[in-house]
Image 1: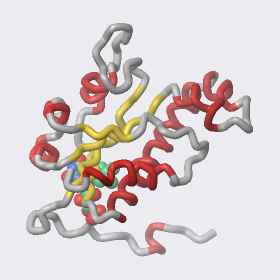
Image 2: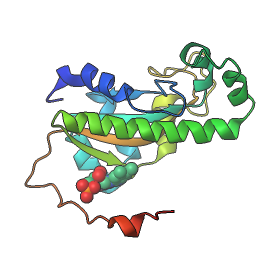
Image 3: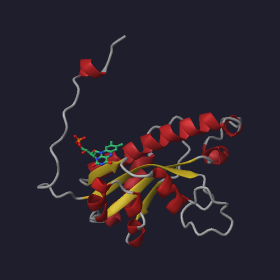
Image 4: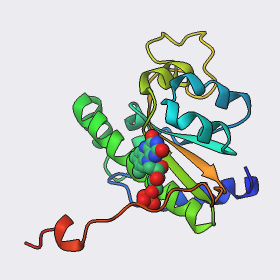
Length: 185
Ligand SMILES: Cc1cc2nc3c(=O)[nH]c(=O)nc-3n(C[C@H](O)[C@H](O)[C@H](O)COP(=O)(O)O)c2cc1C
């Protein structure tokens, strides 16, 4: 990455974002470097291959379906919270997805604040990424997943980070006006 030394700073900034319950890291930001990026290639939509292969860093924004095991440490003032989630898989999934999306947005804001360009992407096959990097569908005793060995981490979206070539960046898309997007009650 052009600003490799900024990684820890970006992570520190992104951690300050609001979360419904602050169970960070939710699977975290997983910077993929060098050969690991090649393993992403088969999962990418055709239109996302070149930009990802030429980006200095691609992060997989993911969520951990066992995040609640960390709540006794991260949310100590509400001891019942772990059990509340442990008994409710639907709430786990909803909460984990919501919070990992927030975390991804904070990552983008933090990286942009440092002058980096960000290319978030949902054009990829989540199941392939989960299988390749997060041990999806495998009993993980002995399997070779370097990041999250137990197969309970799922990808949300990818984000390329770096310094885009301005001559190739598309113009910004139109935005809805306030009263088209919001209703005052
Ligand atoms: C969650 C999300 C998923 C996206 N998926 C893709 C994608 O798969 N491929 C792509 O080229 N752009 C994708 N985009 C859009 C670009 O990464 C980028 O945000 C957009 O082109 C910037 O335009 P804007 O400044 O008008 O928002 C996605 C954006 C978001 C927020």
